Image (cartoon, rainbow, N blue to C red; front, top):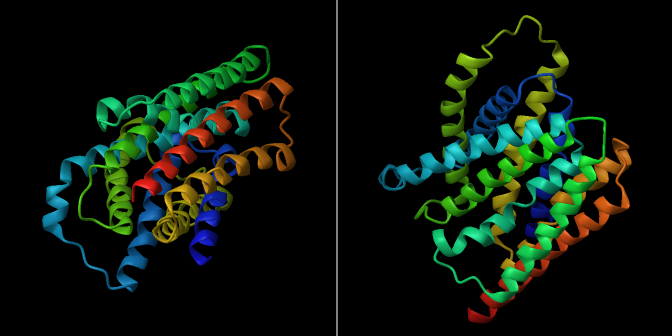
Length: 292
C-alpha cells in the first residue's frame, strides 16, 4: 500500500509540473538547468543520508549509456517546458504522453521486441487521437498551439529515448541512476545556458527563485525518489495503470485550476490517445506477469 501511495504521489507531482513551468519567467533551458541542479542536490542529500555507495566500476561500464540518457533527459525537459509556454497544459501533456507510443514503435528496432497486431492497433488509434488534437489546434487562433504540440512531441521523442536507453543500464539501482543522470544533465545544460542566455540574475525577483527551488526539490528530487521507491514494490500492471495519474492530473489542473477550455474534439482525441496506450500497456503487463 505504501509503495502504491508513493507512486501515485510521484505521478501527481509530475502531472503538476506544467503549472510551474508555464509561469516561470525564464527560458526553458534555464528552468531545465535549475531543475536538474536542485533535484541532484536533493537526491545527493538522500544518497549521503542513507550512506549509499556507488560502484564506480559499474558507472564506467555504463558510462556511454548514462551519457546518452543525460542528453535525452536534458532535451526532454527543455522541449517539454517550451511546450507548456507555447500552448495549453492539456495540449502539452497529451502530446508529451505520445512517448509510450514511440517506445512501442521503435522497440522492435532498438530493444528487439516483437511488434504484435495488438500493438499496431494501439499505435493507429493513438495516431488518430493525436490527429484530432492537432486538427483542433489548427482551428484555434490564439496562441502558438501547433508549435507547442510540436515541442511536446519532440519532448516525447527524447523521453522515449530516455526510456529505451535506461533498459541498457546494468547493475545500478534507480536512485543512483537518477542522481547520475541529473548530474550529467547539469553538466550538459550549464554550457548551453552560458553561451545562449547567459546568467544575468539582476532582474530576478524572489518569486521565480522560490518557484524554481520548489520545482527542483519537488519534481526533480521528491518526485523521482517516490517514483523509484514506489516502483520497487509494485507489479508491472499496477505501474502501467497508475502511470495514467500523470496525464489525468495535468488535464484536471488545466480544466479546474487554470480554466483552460477543452473542446469535445480534444476530449475524444485525449480519450483515444490515453485509452490506446492503457490498452497496450496493461496487456503487455499481463503478458509479462503470466510469463513469470
